[in-house]
Image (tube, rainbow, N blue to C red; front, side, top):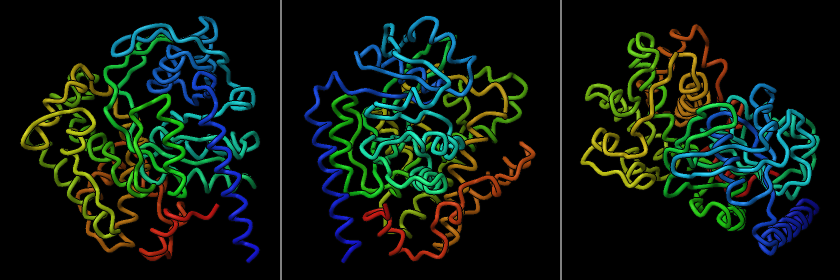
Length: 388
């Protein structure tokens, strides 16, 4: 009975927090963007252009100083203008305190570290959004907060994908090539999704409710495109230093066949877990209004991919992030679900050889995500009810 009473009290407080945020004048919502890379600069700059109070955190002074010096970020492309930034700092405390929403925009292999350094300063009523969570992001973030000794947790949520196709084009400058039409978002536990999405939609109407964190994790399409496109174009990347159109030229007919097989294995994992996942082709239709009768045609017809160059080296987040934080958790989950995923495992193996790293050891396994020994029912219940 005591546990149920505590749970009801917690739910009551959280409903009150969400109501307060929804009643707050839209323009008074405040943000901290954590990460000043390609995505972080774009998001912080866009938020500033829209008139919100924005803090920007990054561990590297090299990326923060130009923003602090100029007082903001110049954005071009799908969004044009100068976005003022209130605080641009390497000091986490001054960036996260007193803000309503924390937008985590770092490679997924930095999620655990961000959780640990934020933990002492997080409030129960703050919203944390992983942009994106990749695969298992919310679960890893929660485990890191627990290890840091946090007692009262913020709202934890993850986006299925990153809202922008963007690049940093200079100090305190970003280009937004396109903004996705819709980005599913899920919370842990799932019953907070409607309230959190309502808050975020006031700023980003592209956010839509996802079913639960396993659906957003399994619909992580970056897991399908990034590692395989990079591994299978490795010679071209090393020879030209990425001087070709990554998606348009990199997805040759043969490479597209591998992408299709990877996608099939991902869909089979979802089926085994009882989750209906979206094919990569249909995702391109939904996110970008792409067209085409097959996956390759949908990639080639996607205007959001035009002009995006390949990585200039293999030491890139498309390998170093997406393999351990996207493919490894898929393969690890497949093992406990008894689903065969030879293509996923092959890309992990090849990437590990090319980068001279053990991505299996580095990656998000079911053990690290707290899923070891769980049944399908247990996993689904965790997503719906949570354990906070």
